[in-house]
Length: 239
Image (tube, rainbow, N blue to C red):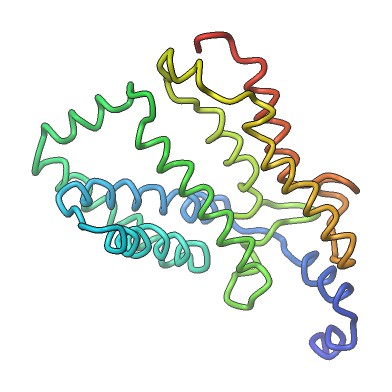
């Protein structure tokens, strides 16, 4: 009967009803699904130092198989996320024990102008965000991972918060890199443009929009763009 009722609704009404039924998931499950891809990507990066694919196509295929697909699986299946986390916990000590100098080299890269670990952190956050946004309207995506509206918390509730935390970890840039860095407005202009474009597209398509989440005219892209721009403007010189 519930499916028949949804079938009689318009596309906009169906989307509104579909999006307001999520009550979230357990905190342990959200933490598991959110952290498992990061652990797996760290292990894959260590393994990639011993297996260097030659050629752009092979490197692209290696990144897809080792980074993108596991992240997608973790976002749609908690059991896959648990498997990735267990595999990472078992593989990480072995990889570090094989070459202790390699582990010391990874620690030394934390002071590099562009730490690889920070790049991977931001990359996984971006992959998780894209996977959730693109999969949320399909049946394969668990409803408990969709954004909650009235109470609870879920995987998609981590999106903007995780992106802001990742962006708040700036690398230690060299002096010449700081001089050549673009202004905060120019650096975050693409996010602001995406935010304005999404606002116009949503209004033109009459797409359902949760007003209680960002308000009438706001969205996640504008939040990230404004937060990043303000943070960069308030950062002390030479930091």
